[in-house]
Amino acid sequence: MKIKTLTISLIISAFCLSSIAHQDRILELKENKLIGLPTQYQPATFSYQTRSLSIGKNSVVIPESIWSLFGDIKQDPIIFTASWYHDGDLPHYLYVKNRNCEFLINLQTLEIIEFLKDKQISSELSKEWKVTKK
Image (cartoon, rainbow, N blue to C red; front, side):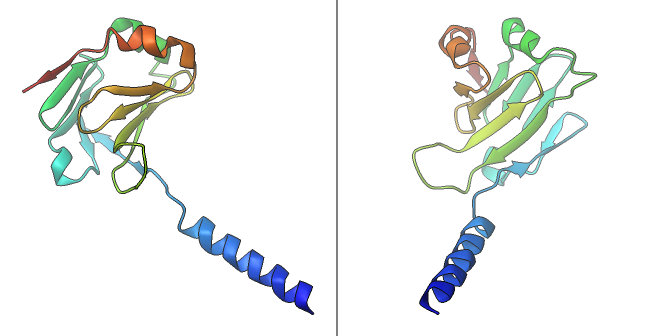
């Protein structure tokens, strides 16, 4: 009887923990506007044509060397998700990804946090990433 009660308690605990687990918020790109970020990160825009990303008072043009990692974006568009409501060591971030390339950007500074597909390229390509303040 005790084992059955313990098993049921563990299952309920696991279910509760998984239901409150952190999830990124999916952002919508509509007419070059990133929809879904809170006020503190507005205005937020992204242009495929100019490869430019602007969030709040910061902007960056994605260097060609990084842009080329995405491959054919017409066949495999870029997806944006973000998190700004978590605790811990990771800052609020924008997750930029498609099948070929994925990386995290600090939402407050627009600096690259980390390349996730190939961690060895992170330091090399991060040097080309130049953020400007408005």
